[in-house]
Length: 166
Image 1 (cartoon, rainbow, N blue to C red):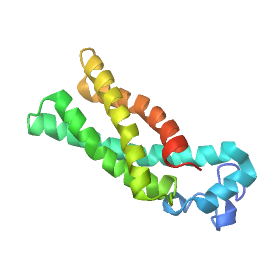
Image 2: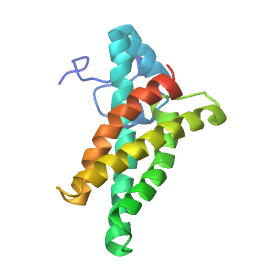
Image 3: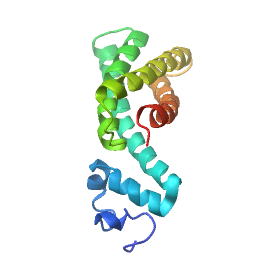
Image 4: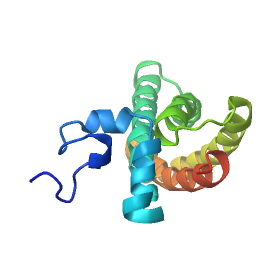
């Protein structure tokens, strides 16, 4: 692929090709978001945030899956209890990542975190409902992964519109 072709990271930030993807991903999104607004409008803005939300949410989800596996297989914790406890731990990690890297929020933590936590409680309920239903039919880690995919979309929409308005 040549410089400037589709798929390149916006050159307005000084990037060439895909070699600095990690810098683009971890940098404050304001310039990328401004560029997305210029080049792709609201759709560009949404796609930048959605990609970052997915990547950082996946980190938190992976943490939850690892902790869930350890709790169930190593420490013999009941599966539904372990799923709920590890979900709460992952929420704290996810808040930090989404606040700083996805939405580059300037909102006060006293305002943003209660909203994020309320949405997470809804997510916890959905997690319990989906997980406890599916473990009767599929392996518990697959059940958790399916629950996480559903919760991901619900949380993105609610956090984007209520917690980290852009």
